[in-house]
Length: 394
Image (cartoon, rainbow, N blue to C red):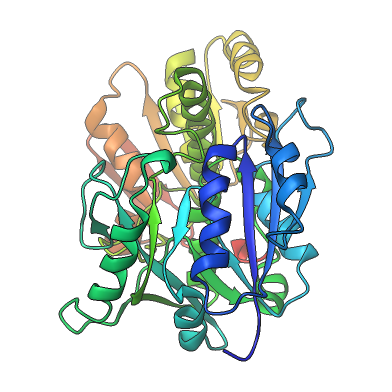
């Protein structure tokens, strides 16, 4: 391994995980001189104090959110901060709730080429179903009960034992790539998706930019499964905050891409086309506005628009960076969208909503310029321009 790399690790009050994560890098990496950069986004557990105590011994650098305790910087921006501060040509995105397996740095490095993103294979405790993209093996649910010797032995015993498939075409953290390609081709993580879904967004953009994904089944990490983010760590308050962040970011992801997160069973992104869709809704109400608004470029509503939109703006003003006043327009406004969908809320049902959610694929597969009806939806396709490639670089 000719070059050292930088491990980029955001932390959101993750002291209990960092105490296991960072030493595993120093113990198990092929090289002992890699950069480790930690960005402290929140500190309710003494993270900064501990990092300051161990920074020399573990040879790490850390940076602290300038608005610590007031607002979150966000995981995507935190990663980009670490990448910007790195002094190496190659970086690795790493989660605080991960344990590095033996020689993973070298194994990923040996698979790295230009226009490639290389990731390790996760070993996780039995919390979530496995579609074949990871290994389910219980070496502990929390860092305090991590079975280090058993994990290390398992990694050594199972390298190259997965049906001779040394790599698949999926992508998940930890992932490695060249810094210059990340900066010049992608421009970084999208700050709109600052808390969740930032990984799905960057993976979509990588795919559209022509990067090849390599998941090596010769290099492993142990993943405590979303504990660092707060999704499954047993803290009800933290979990509730994560659920709200995930809900907000999921809506912003849909606003940006026109579709939900999609990937195959091995985690390779599937990116539907992005069309300029306008929804024209009669008899709209606040509930329907909330459901439909993320799924289009513009929504035109009739009947009590001022009351409905004021309530919606107030509810969403702290949940998104999108300017909703640019997305929600009066029913009688000129409609310049390239695909128009007319909806009467009095007859709108779940089947109609399913069509809205799948509309990009429907248009791509069988759409043509012209007018047609699907269930209770009246659709006019004026043009079929696709805009997803405009989203590659920030």
